[in-house]
Image (cartoon, rainbow, N blue to C red; front, side, top):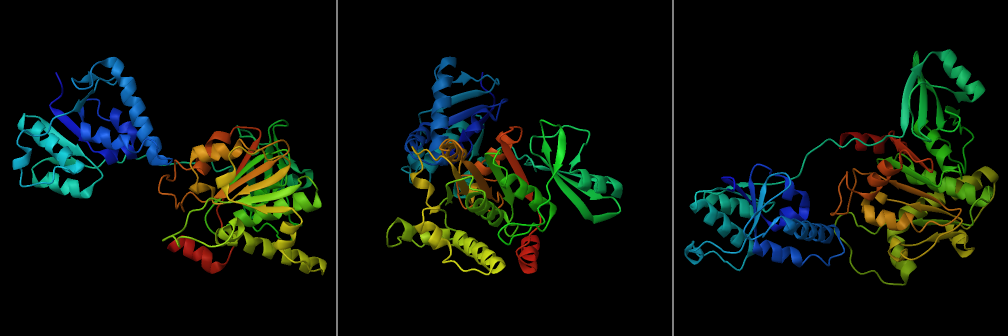
Length: 436
């Protein structure tokens, strides 16, 4: 016998969280046939919604082994599930509601269950349906999935120590510390008497010790301003680490450090033949719509932050060397710098390049996988972004591609990660990031 409680699922809940099918082990889940029809319309969509629709269809198809879905089945978690075909027998008499609307047909199924003596509950993200359900005396509730605090790998271990330990670390350029650490994990050794006195290092898994990461000389006029930036620059300049992820809020120097390191490794160290920079196309706020021109002209507004950083680096380097250049356009003309969208990356192979993917938090895990699997022999890829600033409506802080890669590669010897915490753009930018 089915439970007295019956949860009637709306389409938007299933598309938002397919796992809702297993969320009520002590009750019965009822899915109106209209919801199945709506989900079918999204299956071919190349988006997170389409992916959810395909997941729901696959799960329901697999559940057929437990019996007839219209008669009701028992799920592995001992909950019940049933697809409902019929509406309320007197639907047409219910206050003239428009029954061509799927939401009203979901409401009708719940009313039918209620009149049959069941405790019917509509689960929906549609606020208007929740209002109508309440008006008809039906219990209504949203579903957001399990709300767990998201804790990400930070990539840096902080340790306080006596001043003599710091001095030994600086002099010997190695430091051993008890504990288990991920490959290329950073260490910030802090003077227990003065927290402004520190020394940074990066864990060498083969030697089982931390190696000094001191880059006070800087590159391209850029000198690390905090411990995390020292660790980040060390990872970015190491050709033995083919994938690096940098996470941090606006102004922490993610993109600037990546570009400076890319220029250094390509133009000075000759490790790579080209610097390839890209970012996903997602507007902040309302989209401007169609942009005229060829691909490069269309891409220019999206890539302007990259151009700004490159001009800053090139001008800083020129000032130090008392020389002048034409800026980033000269590198483009010489084939050393390529700025392109991620749209056309599928099917390519990218060897011997320093590749930077900016704003990677707006990518899905599938898109990030597609990008990384394009990396050829001798290529280094750097992904930067801030999971707290997402413009893609189909991902969140936990499900975006950047967070996904950080967690998947944290114990891999080919990867390195740093979370940058301190803003260095300006005092105003840092204050705004903290209080707004």
